[in-house]
Image (cartoon, helix red, strand yellow):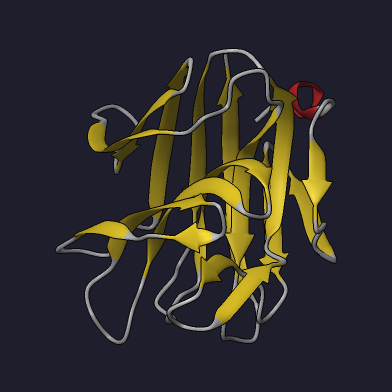
Length: 187
C-alpha cells in the first residue's frame, strides 16, 4: 500500500492505535466496538472503525486484510456506508467455536441481516472486492488475491447519495483486535 494513495481517506471512529510500517497499516480495534443494528437482539452499535473515501460514482474497490483471528466476533473487512442506519459490510468472523465464516451484512433502515459461507480452514489473509454499478453491488472474496468468489449481490438505494467506502475493523466483545491492512485499491 502506497501512503500517497491514502491522502484522501478519512476515519469514522478513528482507532487509538494505528501504526504505519513498510507498505501496510497495523490497526488495533478498540474493545466492544461494532457496526450492527438489531431490533431482534435489542441493541445497536455504530462505533467500529472505518477508513474510507467518499464517492457518488460507480467504483471497484479491493481491500486486503491480514489477521490471526480466532476470537468470537472480531472482524475486519470492507464497508460502504450511507449513515448509521444504512450500510453494508463483509468480513471474516468466528462465531461460538465454529469454523471461520466469510459473512456479509446489509443494513437498511436500521435493520441488519447476516449471510455467510463457512470455510474449512482459517485463512491468515483475505481480499474483499466490491463493485458498484448504480444501485447494484456485487461482493466477492479471495483467499489468494487472484481467484475471487462471489459472496453476494444486493441493491441499495444510493442515487445522488455520497457513500463512504473503505476498510473497517471492530472487536465487539473482546480486549481489542489487531489486524494489518495490506492494501486498499480503489478505482
